[in-house]
Image (cartoon, rainbow, N blue to C red; front, side, top):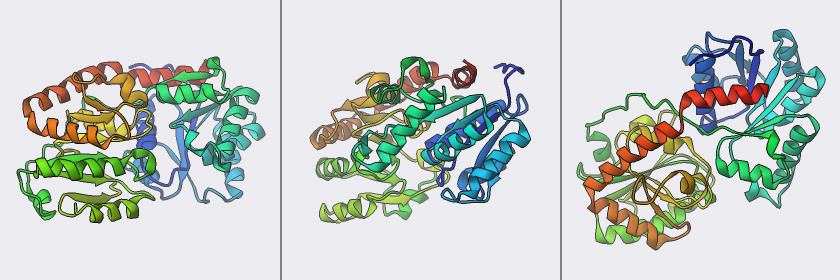
Length: 372
C-alpha cells in the first residue's frame, strides 16, 4: 500500500477511557501511517489506548487533563499550532466537543468526525440531542466530513439530517493475515469447572441492553436442557452486569456461564471459543466480530444492521431474528450438533469478509475522506 506524501499532517483525536473496537481502528490506522506520513494520536495520558500506542512505538500526544477539564482545550490548541496539523479526526463525543472548539480557534482546514455507532438509543435524552447537534454543526456549518464505519451508521447520519455528500462510508477492518493464537491447553476451561469437551459460546462486547444478552441467557437455559455441554463465556464489562448475573442465578446457569470482565487482550479468549455469538438488538460492524472471523469462529448472530447486510444465513453465519430466545436456542443446538458445517461456516465467513473488508482499502478511503 502506498500513501501519498502530499497528505497534510494529521491529528487523530480520541478521549476514550477504555480500549475497544474504535481504538482498534485507531491503532491500525496509525500503524499504516507510521514512517510514511506525519501523524499523531491525541489521547488521555495513561489511558489504555495511550499504553497500546506506546507499546507499538506509534506517535502519540498524551493530554494530562480529564475529559471535562477546560485546560484540555488550551493544550489542544497549542498542540495543533505547534505541530501544524491540517486535519483533525475526532473519534468520540467528548473528542468532538473539544476538537470542534479547537478547530474553530485554529482554523484547521480539514475537520473530520469518525462515527462508530448510532446514538439513536439516546434519542429522547440530552446526550443524544447534544451528540446529534454537534454532528450536524460539524458537517453543515464547519464543512466537515463524517466517516461512517458501517452501513447502519451511514443510514443513521442521513436520518439526522447529514447530507449524503458529507458522508464517507469506510468499513471497519482488521489485519486478516494475522496469525491466530493456537491454544490447546485445557487448563483455562478446567479452571472454570468446565470439562475439556465442553462447547464454548464466546461473547465479546459491552454488557448493555442493546446487546440482547438477556435473550441469549434465556436461550442458553433452554439449550443446556438438550445439550448440557454448552457453555457461555462473556468477555466485557458494562452497566448490565449485575442484572445479567442475577438472571444467571435465577435460571440456575451458574455452572454454564462465566463473566470474564474487561480484558485488555481478547485473543487468548478467541482461541478457546467454539462459536462466536452476537445477540444484539442493534449493531453496526463491530471489531469483535471481525477479530473472531480471523480465528475462523462460526457465527451465530441476529439479523440487525451490518450483520444482516454483510453475512448470509447458512453460508457465512447462522442468522436469527433479534429478541427471539427460541431462535437463539435453535441456533445454539444446531451449531453444537453440526461440527463439520461449523468449520465450513467459519472458513466461508473468513474468505468472504477478508476480501470485502480490506484493511488497505480502509486506510486509503480514510485518507481520501480527509482530503476530498
